[in-house]
Amino acid sequence: MNISILTPDKEVFEGEITSVKVPGITGQFEILNNHAAVVSALGEGEVRVIKQGGERMSITIEKGFIEVLNNNISLLVQGVKE
Image (tube, rainbow, N blue to C red; front, side, top):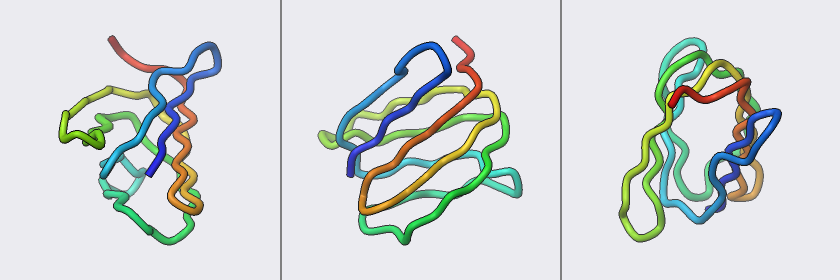
């Protein structure tokens, strides 16, 4: 799967992953390979990514949206907290 994590002013991350957990507005959920198409609002919280090689990455986001279509994931967020 390929993911792009974008804020209005920069690309935070782009690359191949095996899974991502995101903070949905009604609770956390995980996207795995061949997930059904979805568009969902995200709340503030932690995004946990497992990259293709097994490396883990964590980003704290402000609210935003996720779109999943044909193993391509776009996270469009208002900002990230360093």
